[in-house]
Image (cartoon, rainbow, N blue to C red; front, top):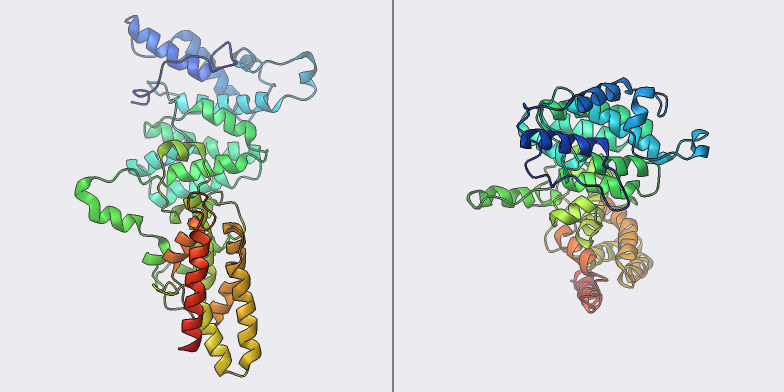
Length: 392
């Protein structure tokens, strides 16, 4: 069943008529209420044929589709079709492919693309890697045309597995694809796809392992280690949650409503930064660089002690103290992450590890207005750690 949790179809605010995919749901329900044989009316069936005729055709060039559009055209729009009209054209053709031969409506309010792919993965109809490849290919599309090509190959797989999709939401996402708001769309797909859900009480041990962050479970000898670290390094300097190659490594939990909106939370931002820092730190080492208890202060102190013992002497120690001092004076989490990015290569070169659990907590709380003393506490602790490690 693809519609059991769907609300009654009605136009959203500002619209006077349902989109065709919403009309299809209403048509199906009306038929059932009136005792009609299961299926759709001739009106819906005829229009679904018209939608399939529009696949791979330019918007506005398929006469049989014109009456199915709900985005209005003004007299001067025929010179250049509005982006919303083009997005509706693509949404209609994708819906036509998805609904084809399905006995129930496939438009399912609330089911974003990430959620649909998560359900596809859990259905067992395809391997996890196969589903991820298709979702990542869509997420990394350079323009709307390329995105639609990927979705044309994906929606029939959803149909075969009996999985629905929110086409009103997809329409809005396609309309925003070539705009700056694409990042929010990407983040919502990634957060939906990696939603761990609520674990069963009987599976608490497995759930705990699943929630462990990547740097804790990292296996330097794993067969895919190089590719995994490269995927994480690709996120350096990018907006958290928008790098599709990183989605599989996120463990952040948040409310489903925030996931669906693609919200950028402190937790997600901190985890993103720590994943990219860990990947840069770990890339040339055969032993884990996540070392519990090694704060940035401890790590910097170990570097300073090593510099003092080697040819660099006092000059090398003074340079490290200046760099570490700049890190401690970071005004916010973004500046702290920037200083850490220049600090990590020094640690990697010296083979000094870092506590990435502690680092994630620091990045999450450094400038949290609900914890106004957090940064001061971290500064004092790390400064103390530095002098202990440098002189012991």
